[in-house]
Image (cartoon, rainbow, N blue to C red; front, top):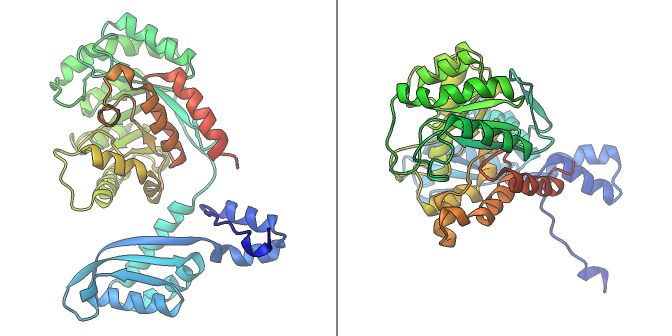
Length: 397
């Protein structure tokens, strides 16, 4: 085969990969350092940019070798605002950001926003979240959260673990299978569920939590969106709170979790499935949740986000979010993914709840490849194996 036919197209996803490939072709360290900003290519999407600012932005990008796609009417001033796609190398973005603050029309604030987004996107390495039962170490391997539903109407297990003794025994079993975290819920949140008040929720949770706090050594999460339940659980000694409404259902949730400096999981959720822009709407919901948490004293390093697969989304929307999980990295927070046995799998494969193991495994593997740090599952032993195999491929560095 001639050298003219030996061609590969390589997907450079991070700086470390770019440096490794350059080293493999023989580039020296000084050359690698110089070329790295040119090796990373970015596509940034901006929303609702005023036409005047958009025109300036495009001209500045073109002058630096980049490109910007926007509504055709911007150049002729027939539209007031536009979404924009920016295509540029890291070096071109650096040059752009140096110039924008001198241009006016709010472009100085845009430059700050882009810098923050890039910093979150490019953050690498491991981090720890402090918990009473020991730190959660994120980045080295995917953590597995085992689900314990103390409800009579859970979609996944039909109330098998409603009895406190059985629930505690199940938690021990999940830990034996490799669970890093146990997530205990006292209210079913399946589609069409009957809400329960805080009194009933705590009646279900308390006996289970009292035993688990004494008997297990892995962090315990409580799945609740009610501030009074969160406070009681934290008083008892649980490690973290998992709120399916991202602090936006009960106005006291953020204050309570901030008061206890508790790690939190903030999930996207909404009534109905109408979106103006699916990913932007979810990202902005989570940005609001993060701000609520931080403004009320929750340490920034103790916030985990969850895109909310199966909540406020139809099948196509769930699949699109799964395909675009990597975009949540722009928020700069660890990502939890909960797809276990969900209707997305059942509808795609036309399978009942008790036959969704393989579908769950596929979503877990792809989720980890897409950036998930924690996976929330029912079938812990099988998903630990899926996670370890996937980690061996995607976390090699």
